[in-house]
Amino acid sequence: MEKQEYVDGRRGSAADAVRLVVRTLVYVVVGGGALFVIATIASVLGPPLAIALYTPPVAAWWTVFTAIVVQGIPFLLLGTLVSAAIGAFVSERVFSRLLPRSPVLAVPVAGAAGVVLPGCECASVPVAGSLMRRGVAPAAALAFLLSAPAVNPVVLVSTSIAFPGNPGIVLARLVASLATAVAMGWLWVRFGREEWLRLATTRTTSGASGSRWQDFGAGLQHDFLHAGGFLVVGAAAAATFNIAVPRSALDVFTGSEWLSVLLLAVLAVVLCVCSEADAFVAASLSGFSPTARLAFMVVGPMVDLKLVALQAGTFGRAFAVRFSAATWVVAVVSSVLVGWWLL
Image: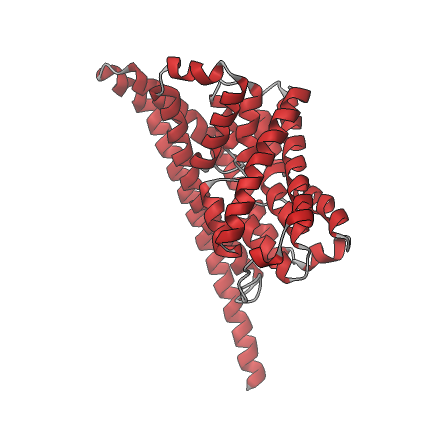
């Protein structure tokens, strides 16, 4: 009897997993289709409506908004698929086995792991918390937290498409982002304190509450819908910024290399654009220097409002404030140095 119940339970779990995956794929397809339809309608009806209302700036707003959303959706979907698969099927034990025991040596290895084990910003924070609970050195886990959403192949490919014919910006983003992640890991080795970290005592990990396919479906559904909303908001904000801010006001910043870098570094924190799509937003800010746009792409995946909130909830407020502020400064400095060198 117990064996039969066990078999029935296994079958029920498998059926539930299949239903969840199918439902999640439906949500993703419907959500992506809805975003695409909205962008298409905007591109078709926006300019005629603007002409009818005698407001040419509205037509320009629709054009910028549509371009950012349509170009960003495929990479957003691909990035969330990869992130959900990593979270569901790759055990945290893989990291603990591969990383050197010395935190100083583990930091660059963990940072480089972001190239082959990608993840989005939302997923990297809980993964880093899981790594710490599994015994991985906090410095290495934090280096991976910063590098995974910033240097993974999806982000680099999307950057190359957003900046066609400009491989230098792709290399600069890779170098500056990886340098920031490693520098922050080493800074934690030297100055970090364990009492700043307040990890939750328990957390559901992959496969603990159901099958790995259930975890994959839940992660994909959450990440795509969550990040898709930020993509739309970021695209709208970028379009509004391009249209609403007078050129004379921008000249105050674009005329100064330092002011333009600082402005876009602050905008990256506020806009909260997903790393798989932020290159398209940066490309639309054509009035700014390449170094300033590089700073936007380096800062965004590492420090923004949603990440600060996630870090505060996962590691504690004291950690989030200190770590985010230090990361912002290091990312800006790294962007300026790499931009001066490569751009």
